[in-house]
Image (cartoon, rainbow, N blue to C red):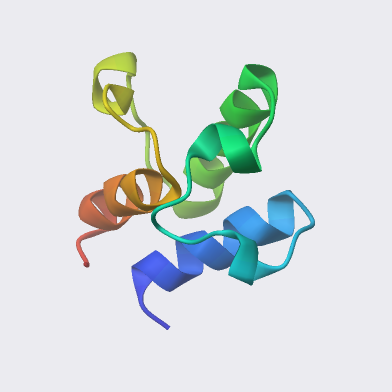
Length: 78
């Protein structure tokens, strides 16, 4: 399993939803309904994968694919 799929699977696990619900083109706000929950998911993902992002890194991240790509890029795999 590549890094993108690992991030997708972990997101699904954290939100107790099927992994199929996390398609790249989906807006994050359609999957994660509150900004507080989104922050929690990002913190959990950072802890899980041992990476850290600042606010500047998160600029322009609006879709599931954007978030997954951000993690995959930091983890060194696309």
